[in-house]
Length: 264
Length: 295
Image (cartoon, rainbow over all chains, first blue to last red; front, side, top):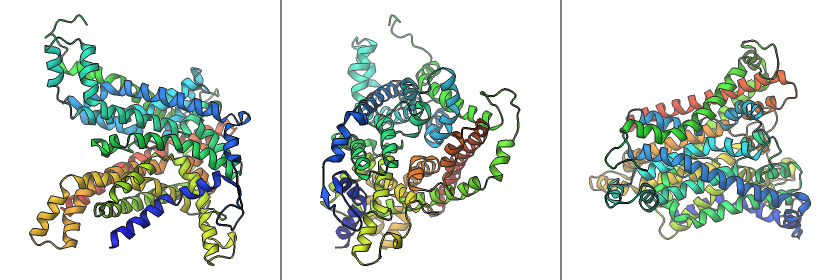
């Protein structure tokens, strides 16, 4: 059978780049041309938790910024998703294009322009400024994902709840949110991942003062200590892997087409 | 809350209210950011007194060999990455569909790859492809090379091979998901119908399967293309300072201590944005025409 052999080859190609990362993270010494380290060690892990390297504060900061951005992006994107998914109005396609534009236009270009405003209003080099600039790619993404979710919602459920005497916030919390929950969950997950993986927006607006994990990793890559860089890269990649694994069913559900719309 | 039932806002107003928060973010940030970049590229200098409107920055661009080289490299890397990812994704999707038990594992692998940040992907590629990386060690063990120096230059090379490798590795799974989703929607029934009608395997592929897969993969490819044009950290880590991609050149200019270089950085940013949007529009138009011809 050809397909299994080809599939095995594809799996090897898919996994191969992760192999040196895993091995380097636990390598004490790994000189060329050895295929396996001369010595294994936990030095990389120890460096991660060493307070002098300030990696754990960066981890906390990355989590904090990521959660804030995800919640804000979904709050702001939720009504827009409803408008695009449930309403037929003139200019709907234009709105959909506008929501796609921040995904198409390079974030580097937008942020270079925004730097001036950030400096002028005192948001440069601050966590608040980084959160705000990360809303640029995440809000349109959340709105688009939620729009796809709302498109499958039957508004009759809301009408019935209202007819039965539910207050507006009861309709929202008991009917609307449960109906779009798969899309909302995917939107929360992916906006968090976009924020978690962002490098250039954080660097430009945070000015190197807002030290998230990707900035630490970038600096570690330049330091030529492969063990520390690999250990740090593992720390950056582990939470997304766990989150995606925990939400695997959300991803394989109807949202498949929207997965990966935002690049992180 | 106290609005009497039955009295509701007109549809148009409701839609406008619903759209307001998200569109405000897009308008304020994206439009203001791009507008500011455009203004500064035309000579507007908020930090310096005595600025004047001019096209000097754009003239400086065309005269700068680094920028000219960057345009070529960026176009080559972005187009090659997109094309290779799209072809690999369609092949992979067709392959995965023919798998029996292995399909769930494959889906898991694809999702795991989607979760990897590009920055981590770049680190992986560096450790894999560098002169003393894993591939070079394997080549040495197989007796193909004498040492790191005789291993081909794959990272920091003139052609951006390492950059393309990272993009293709990261973007193929994304496009594969899109292709698989499209194939799941009744493509099997169509192919079966074609088989009953006497279509050969090649005819089924060309007339049934590819037309089903092409539109979503093309749409996804636009995103890949735009991303490959504008991404910074991957070409910085896997490329070289010269020739560098446009994004890296833009950052080099933007961080120049000489503030007079700022308009040039902004001009590169404007070129980058226009290129991404034009590439997206052109790609969609081209694919649309091809799809019509295929059908």
